[in-house]
Image (cartoon, rainbow, N blue to C red; front, side, top):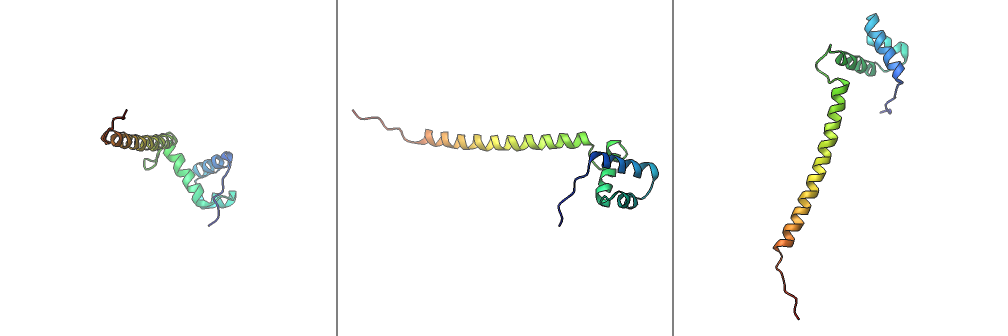
Length: 103
């Protein structure tokens, strides 16, 4: 499978604008601009979600919030694992019998 191509933001905006203003099929606009049709389809759907025309996708702000919450969740999980390990270590230390030093 070939590596995904990245397209400049100007090309994305132009392609989405052309699909939305002209009403031409996505496949035709994609072919004219040299873009994969499924990439353009995703951009159009995302633009529609951003303007509130679709409610089956998150807006760009919603996606960013979700990414941030997932990062925070992962960080909290790591901190929780560290605390569990520290707790187990300290519990083992407290359960160990104490010996008195001999003189």
